[in-house]
Image (cartoon, rainbow, N blue to C red):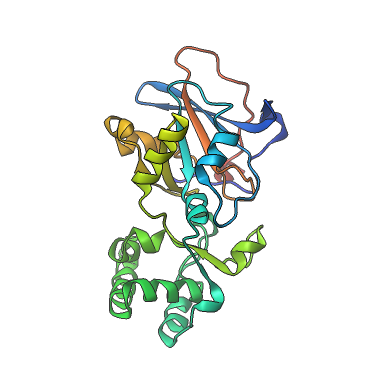
Length: 267
């Protein structure tokens, strides 16, 4: 069952500081017998072309301990790679205009294919026949209660397109789309080589989590374990500016005091 929340997760009660770095307690996730405390690291707005390893060195390294796992949001990685597309460079066609009218929007998962420019970008990446086939199959599947068929057909690279969202708290994303990171496993290895921190790149929202890349040292844990460690999307879905999540096995130690957000279903 999905749990999602309204607003920013950066509660003042959960705010901590160390060596000039601000972070927020995100509570403990119990996964396979491990007690994993998560810390959401606050950063500046990371723009196109910035040095990811230098940013991790600045914000994460002062907080990290031996054995920690770092989860990085995919959008930040792609911004550093400048793996982006400007809206003005996407020529909107008839198919995208038409199909987008039938797409269901879900703000908890981010902007979807109801945004014509995002759908057009998907068409540019995958071709009109495949997108049309996926749309038809997805529509039929929904009649029988099956969702997500469209993205299963077109692939994770389309599911990972983010941006072109006029309601984003950040003006940059109004007219900019961010694609999936290039060579995510390689990026993770580079981060570990330069910082010593085991790293994974995730595509997470308040509904699902995908592991896009990870260091080889994390392979023994498995993607299910890694995804479950951030299943509640501790980075947030609003304007938190917390793209880095430190995951720490605290074993039998007492957890930091934590004021949880109230899930929307409980309100």
